[in-house]
Length: 312
Image (cartoon, rainbow, N blue to C red; front, top):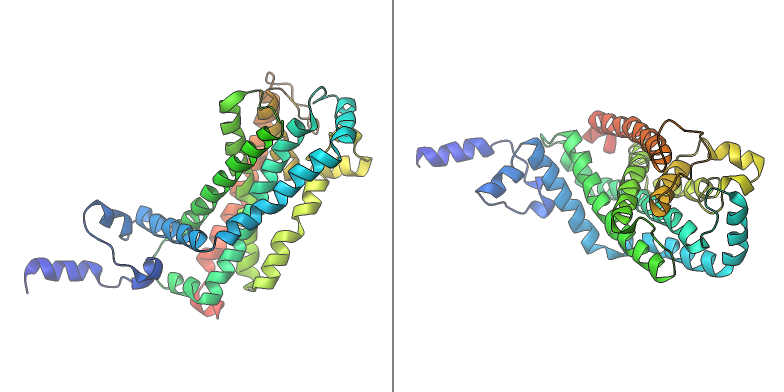
């Protein structure tokens, strides 16, 4: 046996074959850097694995699109005229169609619904024993979480692009053009991260599929309806206005709506330090980013604390 062979075997010693999806062997060269023991390699392995799982189960992707599409079509067709009158009384977004007003909210709903599937996918991993196998490998827990999250964000981007295209077909107008649409997608990514982290926290705490599904879906509709998603703040009941000021959905929707209309639409906070659209975007991004970092840090911490004995 040659020295090169001994060296190769030595470098592979301690590696778990479950580190790639289905135990698929990896080749040498540049690809070996992505499948090795580096942080980037751990990230890439998990990114690929979760994308493969999504492709093999397209119902997850389609399912998270169905409700937002129903909301977009039915709300605009059934409540369009009534809601347009409420918008014109609201002031901040007066003079636009309800399709244009609603589309940013539906885009955020898409990201919320897709993010809800994150924790459910983690529980499935636990039930299949894959999560336990990952825990006993020398993988970076942070890379595991980030790789999984990146795969889910890719799915969210695809779904948001589809819903924005459908909204334009139904008559919505993106005043800021292509760059505004890209900005809405970026806002959706930022908005979804806190809920991705939240559902993963629920999954690690409960380790039960039914409990995670309930926890992930329980907050979606209340959060949407006690925000500025469907109507301007000014026409909502007083107690809902109060709740909306502390609701992260409000800041995601207002940020996306500002990018849609190209103007300042935030009414839950009186920000005047900037100009125009930035009076909405800056506070929305700051609040959502702080929430992402807080819950994301908790999720990574809990994954770091997890052990194979805890999963049993």
